[in-house]
Image (tube, rainbow, N blue to C red):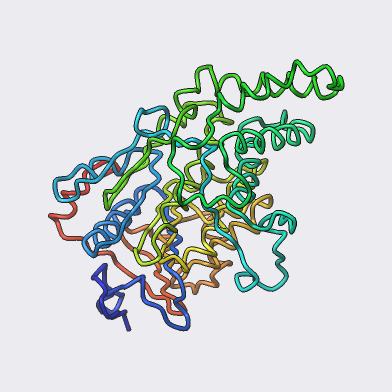
Length: 414
C-alpha cells in the first residue's frame, strides 16, 4: 500500500506504483527509533540511495555525520547547496580527537535490556564508583587501548594503565564526580602527560621487578603515540569541531595504516560521534557508517559492541544510527553475531538491495523472504530492493531527480 508519513519525504515507489513518503523520526508502536540497516552489492545503487536520504534529511534540518572510508561523500558535502565540513581524521590538524578527553557514553539501563541480557553485558559497573562519566570513559579507554596494543595488552599492562589514568586525571583536577560539561579540551591530559607520568614511576626503588617490567613495556607501547609518528593523530587537545549540518569524517588514509591504529581510531571516532549525537536531545542527528564491515573484527568484537550500545540508546537522544555494508553476512560472523544481530533487530528501517550466493541465502533465511522477494534481490536491478519500515515491508524502486543525481557526483560509482 505504500507509505504516507506525516512530515515525510518522497524516496520511491512500490511495485504497485504507490508512493513511499517516509519520516524516519515518526514514533508509533512498531517504529520506536530511527536506526537503519542498508545492504547491497556494489553497483546496485546503494550509494545513491544513501545520499538521497542524507540530502532529504539535510533539507529537513537533520544534522548528519558520515563515516567515510572511500571518500564517497566529499564531493557531495562540498556542493554549494550543502556546504558541509570534511574532516581528515588520520592526522589532519583539524581532525584530532584526544582519546583521553572524557566523552559521554551510551549508558544502558534496565529498560534497554532484551530478554536474557544483563547490564554486565554492556559495562562493568562498579557500585563504589557509580556510573560517572570518568568511570565509563576509562572502561571505553580499555577497549581503545586493547585495539591499539593488541596481544600486548596483558592484565598487568591494563592494571598499570588504569592506575596511571586515574592519577593523570586527578593531576588535572578531574575526579570520579567531576561534571565534564564545565571542561574544555585544554583541561584534559594528553598522551605525553600519561607517558611522562608512567616514566616517573620507573625511578621508584620500591617497585617490584614485575611492575618495572610492565612499566617498561607500557612505555614502549605508548612512545609512538606520545612522541613518535602517531603523535599528530592523538597527542594534543581535541581540535575536531563541526557546526555544519553535514559533516564527513574522512578515514580513507586510515585504511593504509597498521590495523591496530585503524581499529583504535575507529573506536575513538565512534565515541566522539556518540558524544555529538547525545549532546542535544531536541536536535535530530543521524550517524551514518559506510563500509560497516570494517568494524567487524572477530578478534576485537568490542567495536561492534559499542555500536550495539549506540543503537540501543540513540532513540532517547533523538539520534539514529545508519549502518551500511555490502552483505548481512558481514555482521553475522560467529564472534560478533550477537552484536550484529542486535544492530539488525534494533533497526526499525532496513533497505535490502541486490545480492546473490551465500549472502542471498542468509538474508532470505533471516527475513523469511518469499520467492518473489528472493528473485527481486537476485535480479540486482539498480535502485530496487525491499524496504522495512517498522512491521511493514514492501518492494521499492528508488526514484531520484536528475538534478539531485548530478549533485551526488560519481564517487560512489556510475
